Length: 149
Ligand SMILES: [Zn+2]
Ligand SMILES: [Zn+2]
Image (cartoon, rainbow, N blue to C red; front, side, top):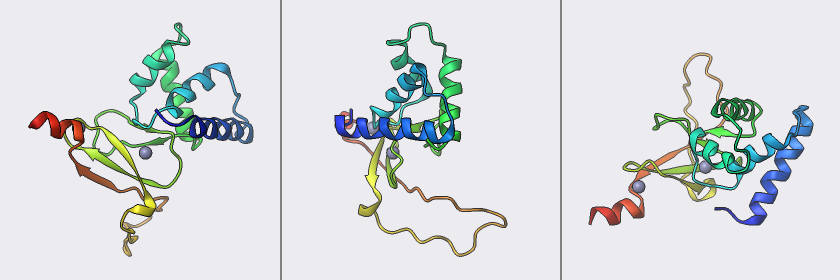
């Protein structure tokens, strides 16, 4: 769970971006985005669906997927996919890196300012347009480490 302040900030940003983008700010979208914005666990779309169903029992997984795609295409959500078979989502739009547990695939946020600065490669593949940089730090989370002992 994230703090009430952060959640309010994320939801304010969401409403503002919807207005700017001409995206209808519907109750359904608000509930879906809130499920995403209220967590830092980088959920799968299925986990978001389970959460949203508690408030909108009639909603389908397809509808949740469709909205998630709209959010990612609108820059309201980011994908954290690299090491995962399933899409992993992030409503933290600030610059940050990720710590990934190689056992259970849990994802944690790490502020960019606390990470070693990353140098942009001088030779990028032809035509590759760099948009942002995200570093994955791999390791074992506390829970998995405890389970191992
Ligand atoms: Zn773990
Ligand atoms: Zn993140």
